[in-house]
Length: 283
Image (cartoon, rainbow, N blue to C red; front, side):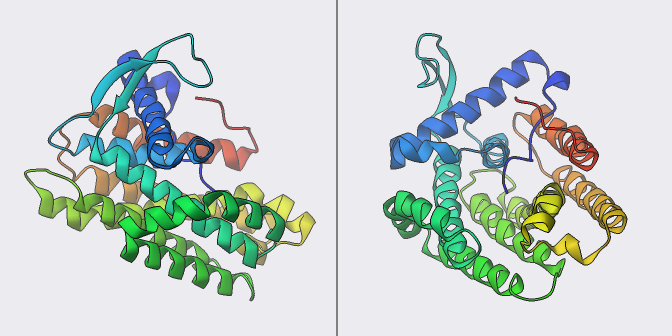
């Protein structure tokens, strides 16, 4: 489901793209440091966005070091390290991966879910001890989604996933050290809700034909192909406008151009590509 919240690379300044990549690689290395090498496979653009957003609103920036990467150990690159924003994004990534795996066990992917849950069991429980309330809320939302997916096709599932991501963004806002922290605490959950709803619906549209063929639950199957496209486009546009409006309220201390690129261009271009059936480019 994750991987849609991404920048439009061609319209980023080179220094901004380098900064974004340093955060992506930094999140990957933070996951390795806190949970192990295999768990690095769960790093996503979506959680990189959360890490970037939290860094942009933090009084202190991350450290920037030059290191090699497991995929390219010879060429050294800039890596963001040692910051609570990266730690939280790593912890939240693990919690989401663990409970998503358990959710797969209950639903149509039991074999895949069991393998994933075994991989993330230890790390998921470790992250859950750091954020027990957040873990419980994520689990509750996924259970609610699981129940919805046993019934008729219902687009209310997008709101449930919106609430799930709202909890993640809300918890992330609480770690921030910012002069206007109260504003962040008010706005961050709403950003998460709009973005979570957007992620769920764009993934549902992306998977619609496969789910129809495989007889799997998808909320957009309640509509004809044309009507599902109309509904998805209208709803996704509304979510994009809400994300843009909310993010414009936030008092950035750095990286505002990266956040702006993702919010005003990246989401739009991703929607256009998915609705047109065009494969998303590598970043």
